[in-house]
Length: 239
Image (cartoon, rainbow, N blue to C red; front, side, top):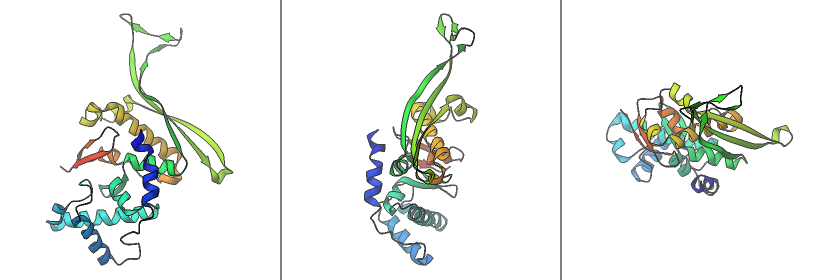
C-alpha cells in the first residue's frame, strides 16, 4: 500500500539527520541524550515514555533501548528518529517494524510483489486434477499468501533474480498463533507480514542479517500487542 511504498522516501529524507550520539560517544553522555529524547515526549510509547523514568529499573531499560536503537540505526545508515519510530527492543533484541522492513528492501532496490493474499487452497484430486467435493462444494484445505522478491545481485555481476515464497495458514496454526487476538482479527494482514519478512530474511540475508520483525518477536514473548491495518505494532503491553 501507499504507506509502505512511501517508507523509502521517508528513510532517505531522515538519513541526513545528525545522530544525537555515535559509537564513540562516552556512555554517560549517551544516557543523558537518551533521557532527553524520552523526556521530549516525541518517542512512540512502544519504545519509551516519560513514565518509564520514574522507576530506576524501567528507566535503565528505556534509556538502554533508545541507545540501542539509535546505534543500530547508525550501523545501517538510518537516521535516529526513523529508527526510534520504526524499531523496538523486545526481549533484549533489536527488531524492525514491517514498514522498516519494506522500506529497507526498497532502498536496496528489492521489489516485493504480493501475488496471492490469503487465498483459499482447495483439496485437489491427483487422479482427475480437479477439486475434491463434499456436498457438492470444494473442500477447503488452507489459506496461502505468496510474494515475489525481485532483486539485483551487484556482487554477482548484476544478475536479476525473482524468488517466490509462500506462507500457509497451517504454519500459523502449528505455531499456536491462530487463536491470538491479532491473528483472529486480521488474519490476512498477519499472514502477509509473516510471508514478507521471512522471504526477505531468506533472499536478502545480507541486508537484514537475521533481524526479526517486531510482531514476530512479540509472538514468542509474554507481551501482548495490537497492530494497525498495515501490520505495524501500535501498542505493546508487558505482562
